[in-house]
Length: 88
Image (cartoon, rainbow, N blue to C red):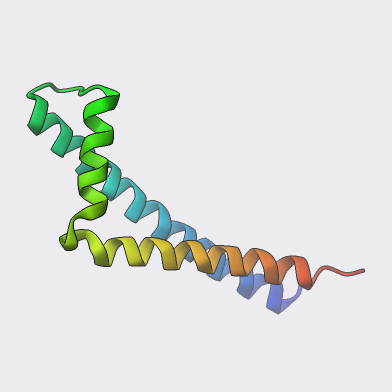
């Protein structure tokens, strides 16, 4: 494994950790919002989808959505670089 491959893998790992952290933060926030609306500990899928739609439209969560999309884009770019650098 070359140094470039190790660097790409490290960047991809960090991007995945950021992506996963933001994803689970959003997931728990949506579940909490749905639970607060319904008054149930485990809200149903319709309540979750409704709360998810509100989360995606909320201007307060815009920065997190941008970070999530950027981390995803970095992961895709790392995959493309890895494939492009494969030996023939």
